[in-house]
Image (cartoon, rainbow, N blue to C red):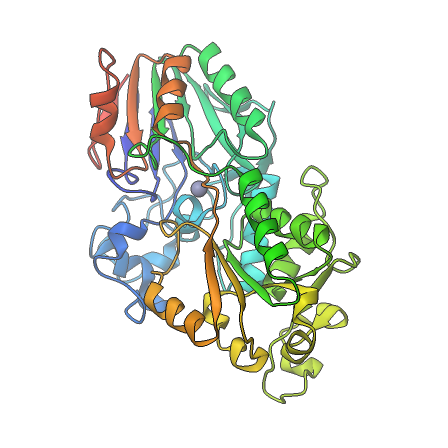
Length: 449
Ligand SMILES: [Zn+2]
């Protein structure tokens, strides 16, 4: 007998943790962090304690209280006794925190399957983001692979999303196929990958479709990446000689490319953070992603903040930042020649504006508020912008399909039953998909095929 149990992603955007069981085989689809659920107990300065993070999440039922799942050292002092792993594999759809973050608590004997790009993202986050995903056996896959776990076969197929190396899965079980979308969109630069996934999913004639619904409450998915590009170009044209700053999601390389191309087209150099420089240096190893090398590309410079010595000395910076010092641009340089750069400025680095001293100029906020890992203090942002006379522009292409495309996807795949997840409005699917079997999953409950 085959069952699906939803241990997260239920009635919320993110926190996907879905258990598939077929006889003895037990595998997870994603093992992410629930930002919405977590925010009820933890935010800003109030966080799980460093030495007992798992226990501090279990206390509020923010992570499934299961045996044979977590690493022994994380379970110390918790009500769950350590047992050898009961699970065979975890399949990660993509490297967004709400899909992957909690693998850090998992027993190292459970293999983690992910795209090779996802693995590079995790490595970069460990080096520069102070993340520790723990020791794991990683097995990377590509579209076209078929991974056997006992009698179950898992087929990863690429999809377009706001991060590279995103996949959906077709899981072939003894009771038919289960399709899991992960997160996906059709309006991005690689929309054809999503089409390929949807077609393969339809061919599998699935028993069940587990589908995301982040934007089921919006008719359309919003701007396309091309429209964001046009918007950025318009701002740059208008800004002649003036500084232009922007903030984007760190892991969205499509958006990076948008700013990179727009900067080139308007004769400016793109100034990126050391974080992005490090990430790009990792990702250039994956030729499928075709990204510029920040060490070689003349159109890219790297912003260095003044630290300790105040003189941009090598020892002021982390080891992983030092190689980029030769590509350095500073506040003083941008102050002198503001019209020559397009500068990435993250919200927590806004104090750099005090050194750059812009007098008029533009700021492009290029991310969704929803996926932000920390609450956006919009009022603070507006106060800073008004203090420095920077005009705010909001330009963003979502990583998710809107309602029309989501419903089209369901019709195309034509599953026997639909499980909406990763949405605050699962009930909309039932209302909109008249005549279809739609089950709004309850957290922790098993559904049998
Ligand atoms: Zn995502």
